[in-house]
Length: 381
Image 1 (cartoon, rainbow, N blue to C red):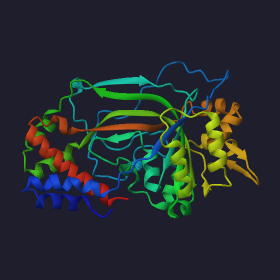
Image 2 (cartoon, one colour):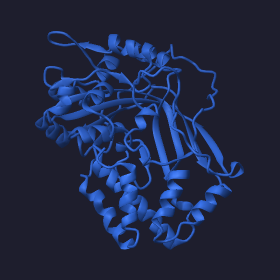
Image 3 (cartoon, rainbow, N blue to C red):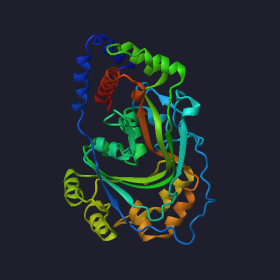
Image 4 (cartoon, rainbow, N blue to C red):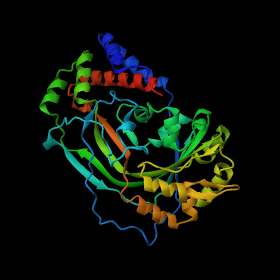
């Protein structure tokens, strides 16, 4: 990381005399290219069938710190180490082990848990067209958001070096460094979402610290953020996601974008078959990636490695979509194996700016946080 946390504090302190500087500095975000992949849905008509695993209908209480606050800049780029979003080797069933602060009065905080469909039955495949590696990262984290952060995927991927990124994405390091484009295919099983609402009120100590923030007082903003956080977890969705990435040429990407980029409604199996045979067959792409599971469950990964494969011209190849379409019985097996696997598949982080009551002071608070965000986003890869 090119800038340390202390360096940011120093920079902001130097310019604290001029709030106008903050407005200009926030535009640093424009230095970073607007990274946005195209998402298309494939309605493959997946059916779990008569042997679908039936749960008892009870959603287990989610052991996640929804409503907890954290300083996003303390470990900007490293959150894949403390939030289970990619397959990791860490033992245990933890979902979030990032320390969070309890900044809200308990009687002001209301948690609402919404059960998801909790099945792959009739779920569409999500297909992302990614021009480059940055867009591949963005596609993987497209259901993650942080207020005021223009590229929230960098919260997780800023620490990724090529070998570890290749491991998470199921591709070889060579494919990630050769300037390829990519297609990401994902199938998600949403189990539950925990939402934070209510008439949120800061605890007395946090409220007192925030009351010391005044327009032009950068030190007070940074002190509050470091002690209590910049954001809090407003929504968190858990479940599992099965995914596969393909490395393709730029010409293939442009052709696919021309065919699919304007699609606003899901494509069907007939469309997919033509696309696969023309652009994504193993003998046409630069690399066919391994099928991976976000939860990293060992038994599930063994199934993906051994069963989700198709016969090619010379060998068998991993393929998430084709294997489930050609062998519908595998959908039921996949359903059973993901009954208890868990990862974080969606996250919404809200800024604590809401609790700055004075409009002018809130503007200054925003400008300070935006400057911080812009500098981090530009300087992490």
